[in-house]
Image (cartoon, rainbow, N blue to C red; front, side, top):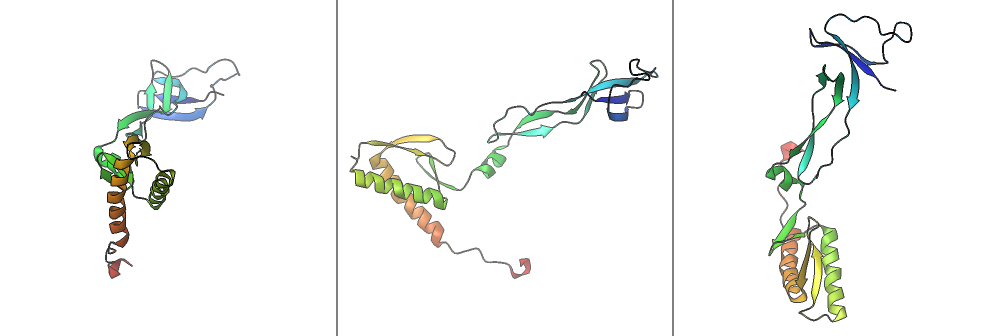
Length: 172
């Protein structure tokens, strides 16, 4: 069922929202004064966007007298700032352009992958695929992977053994 807004363009005020089509006898629309408009309420669907680099901004209600619509919900796609994008990226360690995830789950996955490569007896020139923290796939040689895992392991070890930040007693 369509709903309507009754809008006074003289005062730019809404007289009523969420109303059925106004009729006096069930068929005839009652006389409206000058500047009083019956506007079909519209709610736009959220547009497609990339949440990694964009966000949705809800726009204010729009009253369109010419097209006889009151758009109650509409959206604008806004690009995130680099700072906002960086804040969404989980912690990582960059080695040669590969942003290795440093979460405990990722550390375990890389350890299992290293073990599998060793047990399979893969040659140093064989290629393996790794996904970085952004989900980007990188194909590198086993030799490069082994080298990366030494740097990665040392970095994660340092993170694990880092002294915790002192706690301000006034903040407890």
